[in-house]
Length: 119
Image 1: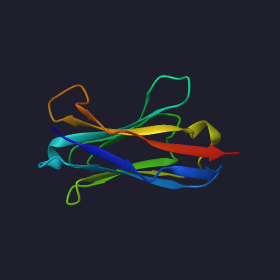
Image 2: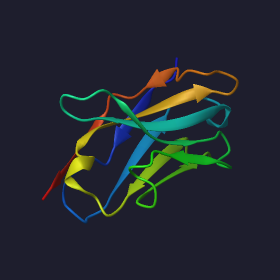
Image 3: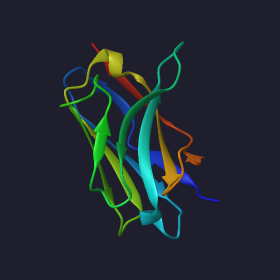
Image 4: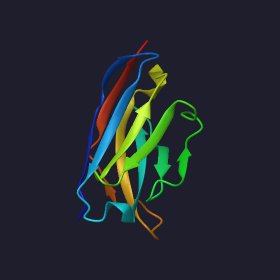
């Protein structure tokens, strides 16, 4: 069982920045790809970004390309989401998730962290 704990959410003005962290309890963190998702009020959970197990490849939703950066530090068992040029429409609960190498579904999810962007 892997536990994921997000942190770093908060209230920020439009145009501002935040960095989310996701700490994993996995003994072999580099056996997992990591992803960030978000869920806005009244909407379904949506993909934000993904990074492969060793950080070699990243993927982003079109809505965040050029503004958000996903990264990871395998020595610290932590993934990050750096968010810049934030917009009110980025307001959501942000979740990190892990997917074991070779699997197609994300196995473990964090509890989420709230990000609120004021206009």
